[in-house]
Figure 1 (cartoon, rainbow, N blue to C red):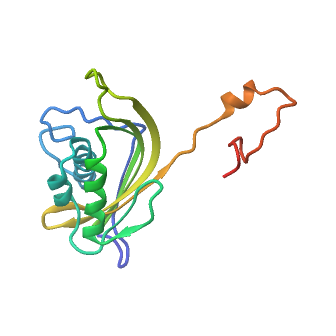
Figure 2: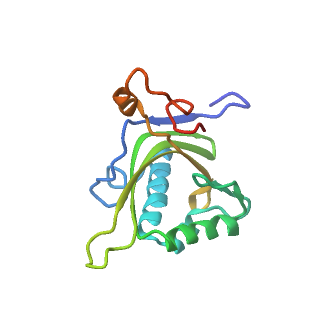
Length: 191
C-alpha cells in the first residue's frame, strides 16, 4: 500500500500509436484491463469522434462542469458549452480530417490521467467541382489531453493543442552565404 500522500503511477511510453486490434476496442486483447489501456481507449475515442464529425460522441467524452480547450491559434475556452461549441464549429467547417498519433505517452496518478502526443494531421477542403478530392494539408500539433476517472469511465477534462513550427533548414541550405535572413530563426519577417 502506498504511503500517505502518494499515489501509484502507471505509465506508458510509445513511439507511435496504432489502433489495430482484434476486437475493435482500440487496445490489444479481449478487453481493457488496466487504467493505461482504458485511458488509451478514451483518447482514441476522442480523436475518432473528431474524424467522424460525431458531435454527440464528442459530448459524451467530456466531463460535465468546468473543462477547457486550447485549439492551435485559439484563446483558452472554458466551460462545457464553449468547448463543445468549438468542436461543433470545427466539425461543421472541416470536410476531411485524419489523425496519426505519434510519441504517445500516458501517465495515470489516482483518478487523473495525462496523455501527451504529436498529432500528425491530414485535413482537406471541399471536393473539387469535378468531384475529385479537394486539396489536402498536413500539419503537426503537439497535444496534451487530461482525463478524469468517473463512474462512467475516463472523461476529457482538458485538451491543449499547439502547432509545431516547420523546420526550415532545407530552405536555409539553398540560400547563398550572402543572402539575408529577414526573420527570426529562419522565418520570414520574424515571429
